[in-house]
Image (cartoon, rainbow, N blue to C red):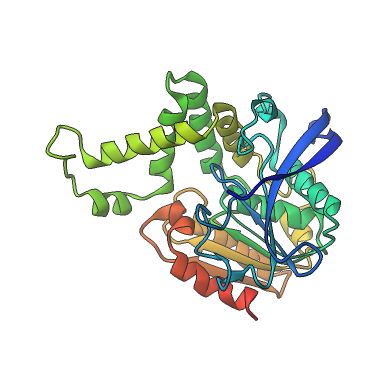
Length: 324
């Protein structure tokens, strides 16, 4: 793994009025050196991190040398949401997770960018929670991003999202095996019945009594427990329900018409979490006040997780943006 860099932030005021005396903001850069090329910020999802490319990069099919987001052409920056545990230092984990919102994290990211002397961005891109952060960053600095690309996300948390965040929170705070058990529920939310049924076909695991689907879910829970801290899961899950660019602001249309960026909404037709219907509705509203808005839809049986699976389609949508 490429070494993490760190920015020290001091006296940061949270949205709820509390002040944090110190926040370590860990990040990685890839591609061209800072200050020599257009900058692309990549925001990670709930269990993601700043390792967006390279051998273990979770978006290495999109980002890298001669990839759609070409690291021979761009500087790619990826921050770790504070408290996500990727720095492997227990003292930086966040226990008071209810104090934080997507808006707080977006402000922290902008402070990090300004510290790095990045005054504008060619693009902000992210899936799921990362896409929600992209929306909020665009509202905070409406003239500093050329392309805003939220994928499998929306500008708000719907009642459906809030309800599932509550279920996850209850599991994380009450289960005897919280990370693994919460992951069981989450994996079914991130996929679809069609995806699961087509893959496993009701088959047993090595002729044993356990079904392959059960083994698959248990393995996902076990793997996440090995690499993810409980406090990180609680925080990232909580952030999802705080997503709302209109909170304590004007109405949606009044806010978005101030955003100068090109907005590329990328939905997944089978997404059960941030549904395509919500994204289509947002796009239709956007078009009433902005001309430079675009809608793309991934066709997939895999649901929400399609943004981590359907790379051929994603590359098709994104290539005209990054290789104009």
